[in-house]
Image (cartoon, rainbow, N blue to C red):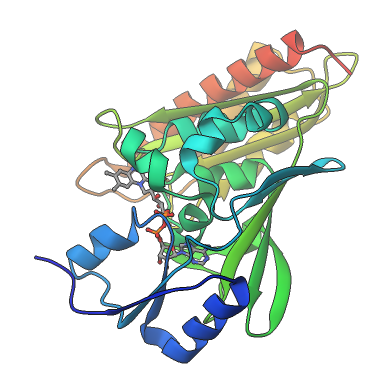
Length: 292
Ligand SMILES: Cc1cc2nc3c(=O)[nH]c(=O)nc-3n(C[C@H](O)[C@H](O)[C@H](O)COP(=O)(O)OP(=O)(O)OC[C@H]3O[C@@H](n4cnc5c(N)ncnc54)[C@H](O)[C@@H]3O)c2cc1C
């Protein structure tokens, strides 16, 4: 099967893309890396009448602004994985991107596309929660910002309004005393995760946790923060019992569903195991990286 016939348009500015999407109405779709949209069109799971290609838009930038790393929506997964700047300033994002699909997918797929697609098992939406990312959206009503937890509304559903684009993603740069880790379990290398966990922790001079973020993918309709785990760690000395308790709280806090790939119980078990591993690695890195 191939896609139904559609009209292909290529925009050269954000304003032009927004206008083309607005004119196309509900039958118009953005094309970025095409790594989710094109397979879905080929299977006729989506049948856009108009496809607006945004690859010529000037949205592949990477820059540091004070304490924030600003990433254009067209930054490719392989850039997140390999860029020295991203690895130094926001290594959790590099580690998460390395888990996405295979090298071909990572060479084409974009950060904005992954967030806009909002697959609940995807690594970058999960990472955006762990990083307290802010998304910049531009549409017919102008420009606005949305915090990552408010952006994901359901499976493949987001806060994007009609004809609105993700144009930028803003993430705080790594601070001294911060550690990070992403853990994942998939049935085969390159498959979507059954469950994935991302942890970001910061320690003070006494080795207490001053900031904890734990985010999960593959356990519900959207990526989720494991707030129970975060609460158990914040302000505490993260000894093995504390980490164990936090991982158990993460597992107790999710409501995964059974599907042909894994039962709900197995996903819950993976949540515990992967959260514990992610926290252990993140804490080790925080200790090695020097305390505040
Ligand atoms: C074999 C294979 C394996 C994969 N494995 C994984 C995996 O393990 N983990 C994972 O996370 N992903 C995986 N993917 C998906 C991949 O990460 C995609 O790149 C990503 O989901 C979408 O990014 P894209 O740039 O390709 O977007 P597209 O496919 O071009 O678009 C995806 C959706 O987002 C919309 N969109 C795109 N950009 C924007 C924007 N800037 N603003 C508003 N809307 C936008 C499109 O209209 C479309 O609805 C895999 C894909 C393939 C083909």
